[in-house]
Length: 94
Image (cartoon, rainbow, N blue to C red; front, side, top):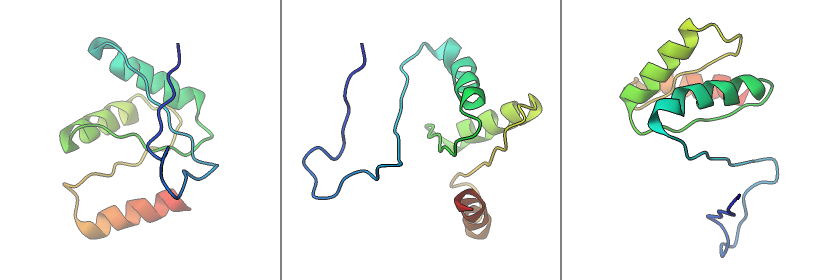
């Protein structure tokens, strides 16, 4: 059963109409498989995926890059130099 989640329910501004926020609760052992399937089935959409640490970002990026999904992936985390992060962000915004 889907549950409505809103961070702006009582805010003056609302989430932009084109922005869709999704989340999935799953078992740890299924996490990468479900994430990879989600990315592949939504390949034409831009998305930002948040994970808990820089190490998880690097692991997921390297793993999916090796799987050659055919989807462009960008790696963005706090362990990168500021100029590199800005370049990646600008590439994403194009």
